[in-house]
Each structure stands twice: as C-alpha cells, then as structure tokens.
Image 1 (spheres, rainbow, N blue to C red):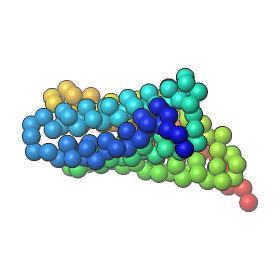
Image 2: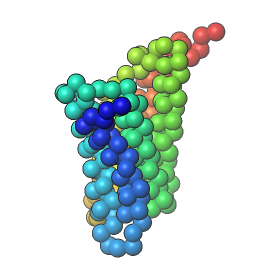
Image 3: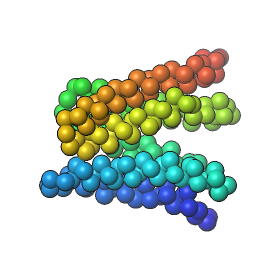
Length: 182
C-alpha cells in the first residue's frame, strides 16, 4: 500500500494522540495551552485530509476507514480529558452524550454496511456543524485560559451535544425501516 498525503495527515493525527495526553498532564503553567494547540492541530488535519483527498483525487479505502477512527479517538480523548479536569456534572453529561452518540452511530454505520445500505448514512450537514462546534468546545475547555473562554467552551459543548443528539435521531430515522424489519 502506498501512502498518500491525506492518509499521512490522518496517521499524523493518530501519532500525536499520546503527545496530546502527555502534554495535558505536564506540570507546567502552559500545558493546557499546548494541549489545546495539539488538539486544534489534529482538528485541522481532520478537515485538511478530507479536503486534499477529494481535491487531489486521493481517496482510498484505507483512508476512508482510518479517518473516522482517528476523528473519534482524538475527540473522545479530548472529551475524557475535559471531564477529568473539570469534575463537573455540567461538563460530564454533554460530553457523555457525545461519546455515546459516537459509539451508537459507529455501530449503526457498521450494521448498515453489513446489510449493504451504508450509503444511506452519509455525513449530514448537522453532523458537520456539530463537529465544528464540538472542536471549538474541546479546544476552549482544554485551553481554559480565561473565564470567557471557559464559558464559550461550555456553551459550545452544550450546542454540540444537542446537535449530536439531533443528528443521531436523523440517522435513526433514516435507518428505522431496516432496524425494525423482520
């Protein structure tokens, strides 16, 4: 298998995960800033790898598999880190909604692929919006530099969790007949 630029970006996103975690826990004053920067770098590679794959006509089966895996890993780890840091019901509940949604949608996509209908669950506009706001939320809550940034993070976290739930309902609506047929 020959690696192309988009797939290398996706692999880079996976490779920086341990550094993201380590930097988050480093005992120096700028650790939160640097972990937020690593996270936003990963988020940008998420957008950029897909853009390049389409623009350069370099889509591959491996890339199509790896990209959502890398996305979910970096997002779930980011959410877990902010849950751990804040130790707050108000952060934990929307974060868990998003983590649970990711598991459910991944399972639903896998099941739909097994029955040959994975094309019905293409990424929706609401999911793309959710992802953008979710990235802002995680970045802000990792950085947590000022009260305003934390408020932006919390508001973004709630908006993205609502969008996550709504997009999950949309995916279930699309798959409903197949889920409950004999």
